[in-house]
Length: 291
Image (tube, rainbow, N blue to C red):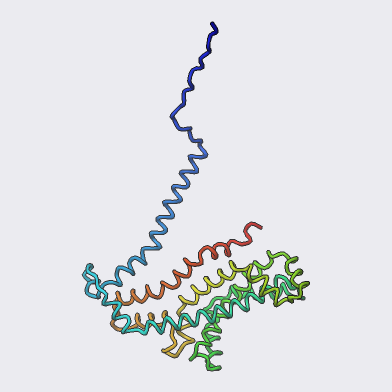
């Protein structure tokens, strides 16, 4: 009889593999980072929670610390022309951003792809305008606009906002367009598009992250600004929402819940724009890091 060799079964260990010191440090670092991010998020979101909760109170309920009501929202619509002021802010932001995008895109394309004598000097001069603080040029600009009679219409504020935002727009578009291969532009020229056709039909469709970045940053800056709207929009029917809230806060009897309700309405559009374009914004701000 032939003997049958029986192989003993393998014993499978149920214990999980031990983590190396590097993996432990990595997990601990991630846990600490998560805790820090949660704390920072809590600090950043706390004011909005306070604004939201307080806006649903009356003045007496706010003073005693409990209760809820919609009276502050009703009073806000009666105290301020909130719809007209939101429309004014939208008009000013849209017109200013349109000018910034058109001028910045065309100038960025010229600085990045069209070589001319003194282009680097002109580019550095334009970019250096970003270093000039708003407060340093605000009064001279106001005097110039007042002499031209542009302080009683949207046009004066739009021109000022466009002038303040154009240097950053030119810098960002120039940086982005330099990454686009020159062969693409040469192929468009050979096909008869011309420089204008190359810019509008080839370059701009590839520059959506840069366009979104400029749009979001300029929208937030213009929407939340107070000084330019306060000085260059003397007509009360054309004042933006920030000026309306400033006038409400300057009153002799200011209702805190009503003021916070208006502040929440003012902050909501900028938050929605940022959240909606967050992906393009991050992509636009991080472009060129891998180079």
